[in-house]
Length: 57
Image (tube, rainbow, N blue to C red; front, side, top):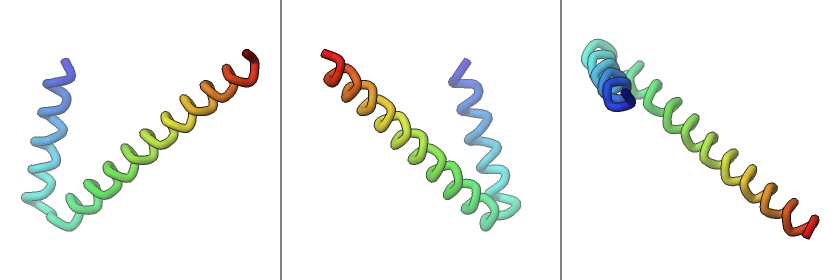
């Protein structure tokens, strides 16, 4: 299922890039920024959970 969704997203972005390269670049920057923010948020959440376990032990 993910393969189909990922393929659709890639081909959709390629179609967008064909029609409007500037918009496609903006979308790519936003997506990369969002993924980076989610990764950092997840790491901080894990670190806080580990710290909380260390304090309660």
